[in-house]
Image 1 (cartoon, rainbow over the protein chains, first blue to last red):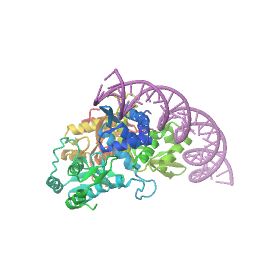
Image 2: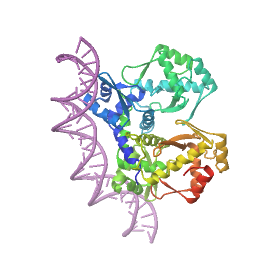
Image 3: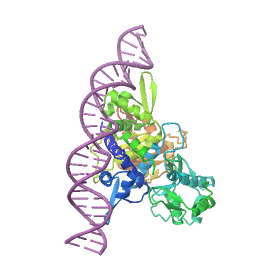
Image 4: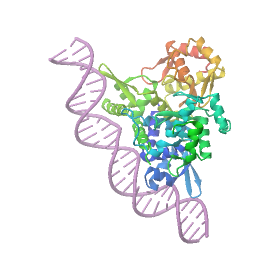
Length: 229
Length: 229
DNA sequence: GCAACGCTTCGATCATGATCGAAATGTTCA
DNA sequence: TGAACATTTCGATCATGATCGAAGCGTTGC
């Protein structure tokens, strides 16, 4: 019985190295990174990272772009991000009975981006607040932005039609691996994250995927969204 | 920077072995299998399979159930199936320009079940036919069953409310890794597959995940659905 | 209780691939 | 053209874990 199992194993083997897993995890914020930065997060020497990166590109998980003497790596397609999202969700399931993940970096747990939307305590808090205000319904598999939610986002200055890529789902849940609860994803989630970056409510930390919540951000998330953060 | 990367790598390593990947792939039809059957599909001796199965259970990817002298293994949660689905989708992406997958078993490519719904040429053909008849809209990320579609399924004797687990999404796309195109999943997809099994349109092959399309099935899929199969 | 059967544990062997130092390549800028 | 820098290639070493034979365990049925 020939199945896709060999390819599945091959793909998994590619992710199974801690260095490569670190690289992929780092790229989950959707932006491109240099080989040096990726070597740093993987905790290996540049030549080792180069070897890992070559494998990831060869297998089409990453694509590379030359920018002067540097090379910028990013996830090849959103499909890869979606796959990693699913794997992280399962990876976060402790075989042991549920408890918080003390081994996750506090900054990551607090606030980060997940490809293009907010995650961590912040992402879940904003999502919860929107649900409580009736802006949002979120089931494990599906999500819906209510009329109230559309109005709310519009009043914030978000044009949901703008991201053009209307083929993307407006509103979907994404299981937060650190909080073990869904947060808002899809076009609406991306729009909220964009807004937060634009208004300087959050700032990307120079290294890593975590973001810093500014003072203005705390005020905005609490005041405008009603988030308990 | 502590992230979930180590857990991600550990999880991937678990799937990275061809034997274990074969076991997981085999269990993607959602049913439980004996250790012997899983050893067979993995192509290893029973004692090696036992070792693999122990790791998968320990890491909570599988759960085991004793049935007399046998042990029945199944996927621990639908989350695992969803993760594997995502991985298979990426695994099926050839780094090389697109072409059919000659290395996939013809029976698997023809018709199989994907957790609880139809996949392969059959799954895609049924989905396409339903789309062409206006029963279904299917975007890469989302799906919608139209009023016509609901009526169509009702006339077939499908009660979409019956599966009780109404938290599940009614209609969603699932990227078919052998056809590289979406097929119908969600509660509607599961209902169609259930119906097909009940009416003996398809039969599960004793080994493997592929299903056999019966003569009556060909008539039904062509006549009732209008599928080009 | 005993035999049959399915499955697991133990122990020894063997193969794959991750690692880094050293050196080469390639790009930019002066 | 040459210097500076980012990245890759090469080569040798080393560690992890997959494998199977043999033996042990546990359940069922006579």
